[in-house]
Length: 447
Image (cartoon, rainbow, N blue to C red; front, side, top):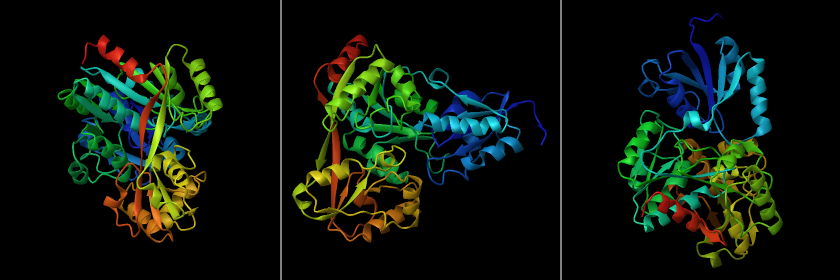
């Protein structure tokens, strides 16, 4: 197929987030380029949509199609693609290069866009919380940071890494201040896991698709922007203070995944989290790895404190454990806080849900075979949420231990008692994150 235009033809590989942001920042208004398609991966059922004309801009009156990543090689050849931009996160370095090889073999260049080209600049100070892997504890740390900033009398707006898995036009700019806002937006479990804990603490949360518009709105009500990162991606907004989490429960992950290694190398402060659960050896190894990659950043430590509702009701019982979805799927963890809490509460038996899973949940186990005897809280769309409900309700157990940060029982009707697990960040030792943050605030003359 011959080219019909002199514009450079581009495909953006993504997972409904970073891909749209990179397009908005670099390609939307570039008349020398034509983005012929996005591809979708990692998140179920995000392909088959279009990036709408209202977001794509005047160069794209019909919008831009979103196709399955499995079609990438054919797409490159048939559409004579010049460049493929890789734009999603938390993949092993070797897997990124396997994808690059597919692209190169199909005749296109493989491109990684860096932070400088894709970061927005805010008119107020920005504190960013990022990590080397999904599931390091960014959410609980960001919630703690928001509380500390508010103690200094500051108005805080939390801007969350995007999760626009529905109607993109409707999700362009989202502001959440209450559960009613989540209901009105028909948020998925994955969105609620991130937003609900902030709302319970009185934090305003912004998210969506068009982050230039999101930032402009958030700046109007904030003294400080707090970036709550997703996966192991770098911030969409240029941080004045960049805090990066390392997980000693996954030794070696400091430099094993893209773009987490780059994020760690960029950090102003390195936080080794979960030191209450990891061995001294793994904590020391994580610190040494962080120091090799980033010799100048101070290293602080923190604990992820797990709290189980009514733990005495778990002792001796048959238990089904439901975990935070992304941490257990592409985060690579075989289990999470729910499993730990159930063991600590002396559950009689952790029932294996894998044999019980209905089709849509069984597909998740097939895609992520590392998952252990836990049920990831999957609900990217109503059908998957219904499959989760069916799987839970047909389990022969006494109680469900739910470690998803959202209120699962408020979303689906569960036919057995539910005990929620929460986790909070706590500082450990010196230097302390609070002290470093207070130094930053003094330098910025805030609070």
